[in-house]
Image (cartoon, rainbow over the protein chains, first blue to last red):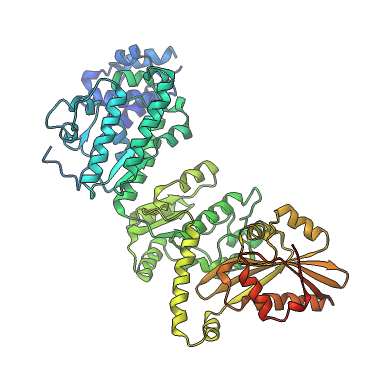
Length: 75
Length: 520
């Protein structure tokens, strides 16, 4: 699956609010609101947006934009 | 726990993590007047109703009279017991209860044996029945959501394992839509008025552009959705909703449609009509003034998103619904709680309405000296149709159900009625209205033609219209019609029964006895 930063940005704005701006280097530590509750929201939104699902391991592994891109590319 | 203020808060007892769902409800239902709070006192979530019960201050602990056991079914049953008690002890608090358990327990994995599965469901159902018998308890139909979008689209077990939140975004969205509808319904009170746009809402087409020929509202493909929608609205009217029109059109053109098209809704079904070029929010304010009803009790339906948004922002109408020419959306729309009444009427709602009107008629009756005066004042109008196949379903029902004024108790199916007129015989059907309302189709006369001589095979009148001189008027009209065709009534078939005494009285008091042929 092809994934662009624009697409991920869109997902992040939906979950974390319109003021969020991500780069390929953004990680969990950069976004204050990225706690366990919003992580669930993020996963839900990613699955919905890209019409896919993640394994339990993949959900646990996602800690940065790079992780998401790698996982989605494999789909 | 003591601090909990039930009047303003919502307590949710759930064994799943609720955060994404509540967030979705907040995002997608800004019209909701209840705000959800993450405060521990208000919401118990994240598998908490089980762990919470260990705390002696928890809702469950306080309301439970016994200790919990290990099996999930026992947890569930115990929870039902608590809710049952709670409903009883707090009649002013509304309890919403979902039937999600039914879905969960289709999973055989949760049962000890195959039979267990059914035992559990029936055991559980008994408790559920107890709960819904309380006036303050409401069932949220969770199962129908799963049925509509399908269980594969609803569940994500990975998330269930990790977060105790086993649902997909699709499910959450639809859940939030349905749940906020229910909360809105419980919170803001019953809706009373439905305000409707005309073009592309009540019918397919735009009167001003397409003309009357380009308007569709019938049982053919183009008008079917609109025909169904009007029938739905008519049923809402019978349940007590008031219908109003609010349309940017020329009034005469809209009126023409109602008088020239055979649609379920008639011009007079609408209590207030605002057909002009004023802003819709302006018109809605005027409707509110005229009816002396608050805008909160209005439902506004329009096919134009611009009108929806403008009414939403400029008035207090909370339920603004975009009408779309799409059957799936249509089914969702008619399924909304806002179109329901909170109190459940007896099965036959229409009759209930008619009985109410009858009460009014009875009261009126007392005011008049004689029955003739009363009948005159009722302004009864009858209309008679000959061989109208559209009426046959109702006529067939009359032959089955009517007992008192029925010359020969013999049921006719719709196809038998069709055969009857195909054999060149006649069926007269009777419609009656009076100043209080429409009785609908309430009578029929079957005439068998044998050359110039004709036989009255059957005469049926619904008991709702008896005693208003309609018995004579209907038959006189039919005889007059036959006379114009140079036909003479030579025989009336009659079969006496225990129940048709009013019919027998009618024959005896009129001069038909000489041509009566009694059948067995």
